[in-house]
Amino acid sequence: MKLILTSLILAISLAGANAKEIAHKVVIKSIETVIQQTPEFQVNGIKDKKFNPRHWLEIEAELEVQTTNDKGELDTKGFIPEITANWFVIIKDKQSGKPIMLNGKATFREIRTKDKKAYVSAYISPDTLEKLTGENKPSDKDIEGVALVISGPGIVSEGEHKKGLQKATVHEDTQWWSGSQYKTMDGAVLAKSKTPFAPLWTDRYPVEKPEL
Image (tube, rainbow, N blue to C red):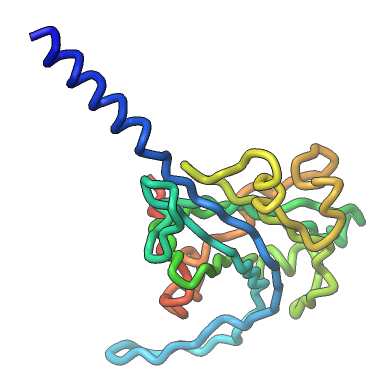
């Protein structure tokens, strides 16, 4: 009996030694911004209402994504279960003359790694843009800086990998998004699902995780 128990413990130990922790790797490759007009849709069965499309700031980031299997090998057909995109945007407030940092986040599920590429996006509403810039039609020049920080369970973030999880369009080395020098507008950077763009380009982006 003692021999059987010893053999069982040894077998479990060997199995644990052979199994490796699944690791997910994410690198932010680029961040781009563009001014988009409110999309217009044709819907039947309702009385149409006229409106003048306004202007949104769209932010999109390209990610390089990889994952491994339980043997530590690259899994080209694997999925990263979850990532959270934390956005930070600097816009100069016309009234105060001082920059304000807007922030917001969205969590995504089942990020496909087959193409080693994924995209995430976020938006700032026309009301927020007009309030800060004083312009009906803002431009990219009104945006002084954008930063993105990626986090999530199982994502490798030690050493050199940490740098790939954060990127900014300006002054990246100062990590301005983590300081307290700016007045902030929490939640002003919106997830795509909270905008009129929600039904568009669904195959380009991973599915957002619903907020509880």
